[in-house]
Length: 578
Image (cartoon, rainbow, N blue to C red; front, side, top):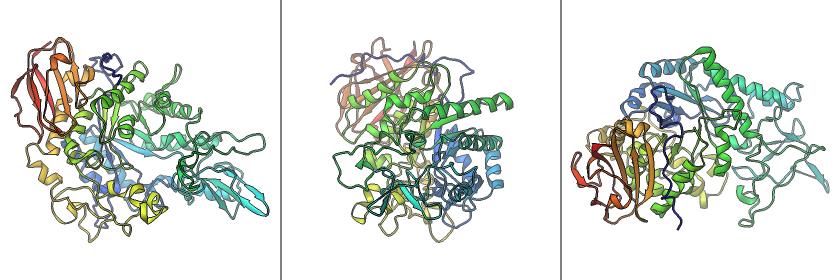
């Protein structure tokens, strides 16, 4: 297997310069909060903004720089907040605008930055804009994608064979307007028409509104869906070609997505939004406001979101290489390839980011095994660039069992009971584990919107604070190490020692060398670092150990012989500077 061992990535990529004025986000630790499941302050079983405010000090405790909050805006909750009916109002389920303002105020006191989830692809069908569009009002008529469809043998059919992410046709008939509207997600989530400049300005105004409210940036949801192929001269759209691996026309994979995602206009939309953020900073001062964009696109397309030769794009186009392509059985060469492939394809002067978990994927410990929880936290927090951690991953939370009866995720509910667990995102969205008490300390009420995971008594903040090498305390120790100049500013070299062990070397002239080692599988391994990296100091000491380790923090070891226990991840620091 071809490896990238010859690639040495000197962090001339923008994040490695030891420049005190480097942007705050380049090596930041981001933390995703799913507000419904973070902390309930009023006993109704659903998390809320006051619950977030209550727990902001916890974010400070675990070394978080900024938190991205999943949607809390006004919504009928067909897709749990990703179906927005008013882009400038807080949904009463989560609190009030005053609650939001108090949260931002407290976050600024703690120096924790707030990133808002921006959902531009679609609104709710209960949004006033959609109602006016459906009624044919002149200004709003083309806010969304409409088409009358076709009548064949007296039967009306949708305009194309396009399929919704949530199964079934991506077109829904509207009796009032007597046309179909496009919805790439739930039928209650009609897609905006971003070829309409009025729509673009409407969404630009949403960004300005929340910037004025004090947010530090936006995570842009599902950006790769923003544009569809342009209609032809007759206003019609083409069918997408069939995939041959399914005969179910309701399955999203039934068609090959060449007209409904990754259109060439889409990155330019992000460039426009970056201009708005930069202009706001220029007018108002303060730290740089950022864009984090979600796109599950091929890596060469993702790179366009960083910008082009004339326009700046998102500071953080999410790097989903690890979350998408690593599997339970992936060996160290696969890890090495995915990490180095991102770093080598990244445009000059840009910064890396690393994601392994979020609210749409099974928990890290459930995908890769509970034995590897620390391993992935060490990896994310010692690679060059910024990290994005989903709430509870610092505790090693696992997927909860959610019965068909208790399932609420539309992605699963629109399917069938016999395979709902493969489609459901509910298991990773269960309430946060704060204590070993009733409902894991999430609520004082009598129920929770999703069941609490059964193992909460073992995996919770209260319990793990008291265990020296708990997942939580390993995570906190890692955050302290991230402040070391070598890890914050240094160069990086990533190599597979063998199929079983991955090594990450971080180095900076005049400072200590740090090496992270990852034993991916369940065998004891011995490593001679001199066979892996050149010019190393002779001695190292343990700068981080985990519950898998038999060594103690501060123990010294020769670079020529390091023993790794099954699934162990460690960080070593040289005893001398270079």
